[in-house]
Length: 261
Ligand SMILES: NC(=O)c1ccc[n+]([C@@H]2O[C@H](COP(=O)([O-])OP(=O)(O)OC[C@H]3O[C@@H](n4cnc5c(N)ncnc54)[C@H](OP(=O)(O)O)[C@@H]3O)[C@@H](O)[C@H]2O)c1
Image 1 (cartoon, protein in one colour):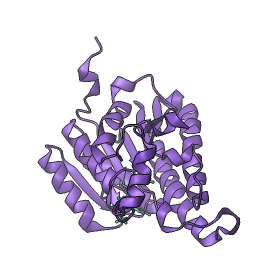
Image 2 (tube, protein in one colour):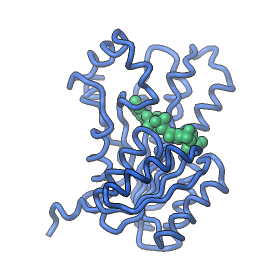
Image 3 (tube, protein in one colour):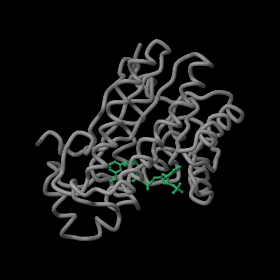
């Protein structure tokens, strides 16, 4: 009978590119606590080692692979690292991305260089590891679970500056639906979460401005910004057997923000 056991990730192997970041590291530790072995990827050894240390404290086994998620050979290395160490790959969480607040330009003059940077950081960094992971999941059989990290900006416009970021996250939402449809025959489920502001180092300087933060909080019905622990439950659900009939969905984790639009 279905029950709480369906939320367990016991014995599953998860790869998290971006696992040294704010959301990625929180998910790595939580997934280890739920029973998974976790491989984290990123460009900085130190932050990956910190996450692996936390994964081990949480009772899981961890592996750090220094890799650029936009590079095909590096993505392949993350996947083979998981397979060589843990025998297979069951879960991919694409936790690389962001950058929106660093490059705000009016739409009519949005420069190509910043456009390309945002698209690479968010879309290419998702597509390249997903292709490598899906090839492995298809070859090994037994299905798989892929979770993309989008943003409420994938569905909503905003007054100024976000052209590239909304395009990138909109692309992630579309790819989530496309991959879910295309890989369903292989038993690979593909879903996405779309948070509003989550208090991570990436947005810390924005949220440090009390006026800016108040403007954000006023728009969110639950009256606060997100914390990384708000991401954990929905992510475990979507990557567990509890969601075995859920695919192609994009779940808002936004304190009700999108409900107001
Ligand atoms: N925080 C928010 O408010 C918020 C809201 C909505 C959606 N999101 C989304 O959530 C995701 C994670 O955001 P976050 O706040 O956790 O950001 P973060 O703390 O900056 O983490 C991102 C991680 O990605 C890694 N990374 C960047 N480029 C990479 C590349 N080319 N190859 C490999 N790793 C790379 C970074 O490590 P290295 O630089 O060491 O490689 C970093 O550890 C992003 O997609 C973001 O758009 C965040």
